[in-house]
Image 1 (cartoon, rainbow, N blue to C red):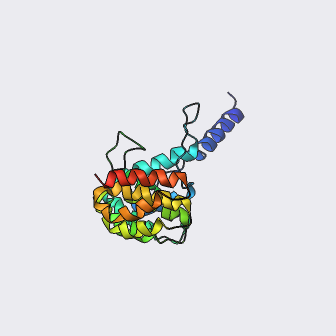
Image 2 (tube, rainbow, N blue to C red; image 1 turned 90 degrees about the vertical axis):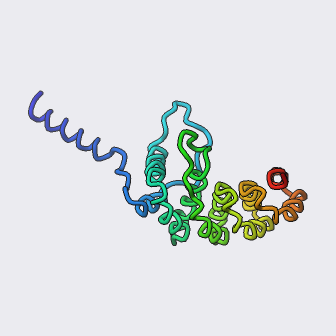
Image 3 (tube, rainbow, N blue to C red; image 1 turned 30 degrees about the vertical axis):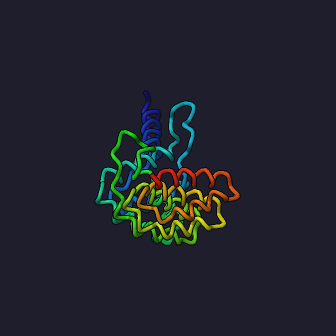
Length: 210
């Protein structure tokens, strides 16, 4: 190999290193801010080749880091629900719903997110509908600890937004029997114009009215 070829090879290697996956932040607050770059939804279909795109690999790395921080990350996540950037608020609510349940990664214990319930209740009044939807689902992952959210979720059942009504039912079902105060509103939702809302309301009633 000539000196010129060697120099080109070194430059190419440096370029490849520079273009590799960005370093994942380490502190909880930095991780929360890093969530802003992602769509506030989890892809429902795995890639046909089994290889996640770079953005989803990075999301998983950030999720893994937040998960590994455990309770240390909870205060930063609570603060993130009040961030001025709507993308941060959306993605924090999404992560809380993911981490508080077991559907995203069944091999990992759920994160105890009960400490975020007050912030999640506040998020149910957010100016952004997607934040409200994701917050309602995350509250469902807190179980009976989410009972302070019941009045706000009942209010969300009257929203003109179908997605918010659906997720209100999901949140109430997650709270379970402790959400008995919502039964009249849920029974009213059985006549909702949306068949999806009707189904979610029926499921919530079955879970709550054991």
